[in-house]
Image (cartoon, rainbow, N blue to C red; front, side, top):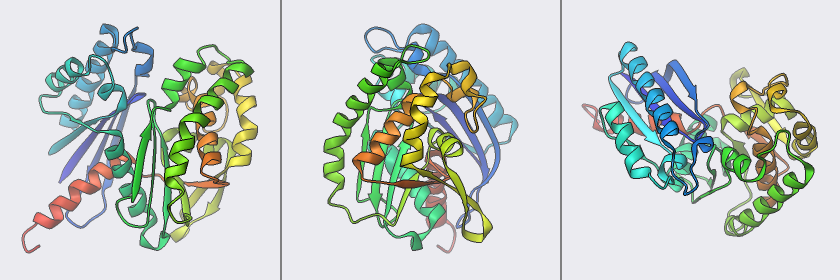
Length: 314
């Protein structure tokens, strides 16, 4: 069966098409992304502006066309923080569903963390033991921890890279005072979260799973041999911290010349780096490993699981 997962996030509208079967792993066939950076389209009352809604509807319509051309049997459409938190979210969801021709599943922050944790667990396997997860999107930061397929604790906080860029780092490049203000804000938001997570066992693996974290790992991290010869990336907190002032001095339009920094991440990568560093510091983490699987794979895996349990003879 060919499935599609459409992830309508704060930074991109991303369609992942994969071939799946009961009990099997998803095999990616097509990936199509439209960069939106919805945080640019927020009005004074927290609403997505008409221009932003039009861009969103256009991206969703294009994803629907690609899914049809790829012979997708079923499209699993989800939206995350930018849509769920918009002041006009109900109207925006209605416009998206009209463009899709089907219902949209709007994920809460904790649910988003749980789906992502499932994907990370399946990628690393049961032998990985206790996992602590960081996932930075455009609008929010998700954290989760546990030793099973679903986390024992999961939280979402409004520290997404796009949101923090708009609120704290609007200038290009941002000044040192703005960086310090963002660092202090992130530390304050994360302090009670770290306190709640402190009751969890010490993690065997600390994992980052978002595109922003993968970009930062390519910039400031290093590769190590992994299972079955698969190379994996490790991002040390010390190296990440050292890169923050260097990134902040470089104008956004030239950051994409750096290793791992793609054009769609140039504006918000500084905020992402500051937030991730503060999260690692709050959780007393020296380094993290990067997972290639994240939210979209988690949605696929949960659907495959339902197929497996409902398959003939199951």
